[in-house]
Length: 216
Image (cartoon, rainbow, N blue to C red):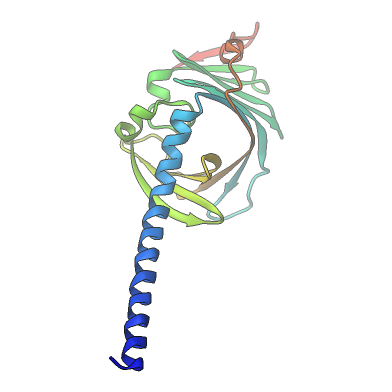
């Protein structure tokens, strides 16, 4: 075997090895998003984080971003408190979801079994065992330095066509919500504290005296 033949075979083997490595790497990338989602659901039984929420309209001027703090405790308890530019509070206590709007002096109460379902809150405070019952899950690979998963609600009329979750490792960093009108809501999370938020009192709500209470 002459030297040129050996070089050609060596180059061919190197190409095959490189192709195999790239294929394995691509397979790992595709699995990372789903693995991160399940790790987040099973490993973070309770937690707290800051959030910033920005609506990206299809046309027109975007409203001011909303910022606040969330807390959750599995299964099914969460607290979503917007602080700026206005105050609003959503609390799920395991049986009911309470929406408190101080500006309107109004509380809206819903059955949690109906309200949680295939909602974005289910991906924050729900049960990993129900994920694929409520959502079609698709790994969307890597972009913007994050591993992405798309969750498409199986139920109809839940308010969202799709929910994309971006993970930095096993840390939830972003949630993008696309509604049936094509409007995008982008939520960024920061200062995640795992196994925090176990104070049961923060997942309870009592209608303030004098406030209107609407039950749906």
